[in-house]
Amino acid sequence: MLPALTDTFGNPSSVHATGRAARALIDTSRDQLARALNARPREIIFTGGGSEADNLALRGVVRRHSGSGGHLVISSIEHEAILETGRDLNRLGFELTELGVDEMGRVSPSNLAAALRPDTVLVSVMLANNEVGTIQPIRELVEVTRAESQAVFHTDATQALGKLKLDVEELGIDLLTVSAHKVYGPKGVGALYARHGTALDGVITGGGQERARRSGTENVPGVVGFGVAVELAEAEREVEMKRQAQLCADLSRRIQSGVPDAIPTGTPPGERLANFCTFAFPGIEGELLLMRLDRVGICGSAGSACTSGSLAPSHVLLAMGMSPELASGHLRLTLGRATTAADMERAGDLICREVTALRQRALSA
Ligand SMILES: Cc1ncc(COP(=O)(O)O)c(C=O)c1O
Image (cartoon, rainbow, N blue to C red; front, side, top):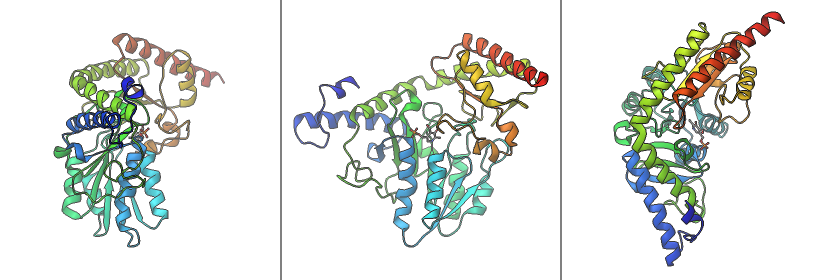
């Protein structure tokens, strides 16, 4: 990223040599991301993050139907970037169905089939959930959508990038969101994959950059960082996910032996993101647990770190049928490249110690 912040400072839209050099950096990143997704470079639209890519997907598709209206289907456990955008479009006159999920957070293809209508213009179901790591049966959901409607299919794959193999041909989707910071790239950069031929209008209008789907001078250093980060993440993905799955299994064993009534949430290992370790602790105030863990150097969250500062029971856990009391005792731990086996031993001990201490305190109160 440093050359893009220093020597190669040209505007990629300029035709002079410095501009062309900056354009070449963006082209390289586009190739890198396209390779990771098995897409064509021209199908990649760089954005200012995952939320913006989600907005572009939903608003860019429905724009074609403004005036005539239409029906949108999303799942009830989407990230707020989809949920709130869907609800906003609903206020603007589009009909919205929020599909329920089972107790592990999965959308059922038959429920989707029942929700589809002749006027459904878009279906958006996330590939992997950001609070419990549940992976959706996207291929089957796409098949149902194709069989029953003309709708465009979007998936928010922000959490899945670098964790699962993302092949847009195998998935069969039309639109797919990714974000750089999930693969150790810079924050504030993302992309939308848009299958060639998908009816999608730009939402940010202006100079016509990114094939008129996202106007504005490109964030060249950010885009460069994204391209390199995704290439590095893909190179180590299989080995790293195997390693993190083992660490997660070890941490889960430690938590369950120290707190036998801890309830694992989401789908079982093998059907969830390998770096997710999530539990609900009955009778525990999650907020207090998080504060105590933070004091001993464990960075966890209750629901999702993406919902800024919110400590209300998570809409995801409630949609999975969890009571508000149990949902407020939820702990979400995610592992990463830097997590070690020694971290698991220490985290396991400290989590069990803090949960036990909170329970003893509640008993003696
Ligand atoms: C599933 C999902 N979608 C969208 C986003 C938003 O991405 P960004 O923070 O890049 O806007 C996030 C959070 O990071 C996420 O986890």
